[in-house]
Image 1 (cartoon, one colour):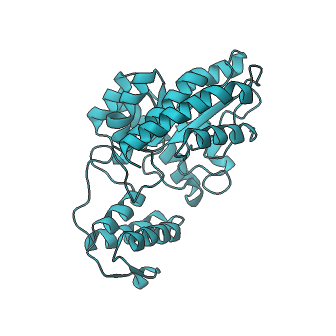
Image 2: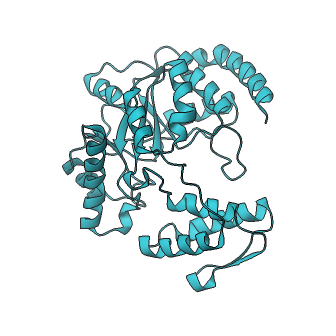
Length: 329
């Protein structure tokens, strides 16, 4: 969909939402907090990142939130949950990992509609780093056409002749190595990078960009150092990742972050209850997951649910918001 089509669809959708949302949600809905999860906001459509919103899509999503919900900074929202002063239709916007486009593309839209946000940053990738999943994608994006044979790394034989085959290879390789040890995963990343053209060095926030986000009022939260799947680590390794990431951000920003996001974030799969205790002991006041749901006064502050609005129209965005309301945590 091009920018003009996005604008037309957004205008139609906004009128639709304005007409039906008050009837659907009502004025006496329970005091629940919806926490939205984003990663990136793209300048234009990317066939290798089909679920990431463009600036135009993010614009109508934030306009919808500003018009029909009550956007709050996550830390304030959690305080108001406990105090019993949370407004109806409360929502908090969060971003994971620390991509540069959070500053370049998302922040202008957030400021346009007065929507606060929290960005959870994995500190190793500041100033030119690349997360392993991004390295897989960008390696295959820039790889010469042909066959990619990775049997020596416990993987398969993949076609990379066109966009569709490359996308399929990215999905399969990512799935296969996701829960390997960091060293095993890095071996695959290195092998792919050796077959590809030069990888980008500006996907993640620089130190100056991170500080600019914080100066603009964006809340910065911890997200470990290396973005590991905590459930695959020994307890002492997980403890270091959680605590060191907090220390890194304190050194960069002058104060320690109060909020934490579990990498990948599925309880019992990506992190365990012991890790929630490690987060608390590291000094964080709350932590968010990627399990669906809404937060209430009864929610565990270290197991707060979030959901991702991967929707191309405002109607579907609204439907996902409503479905999420049924998944209380």
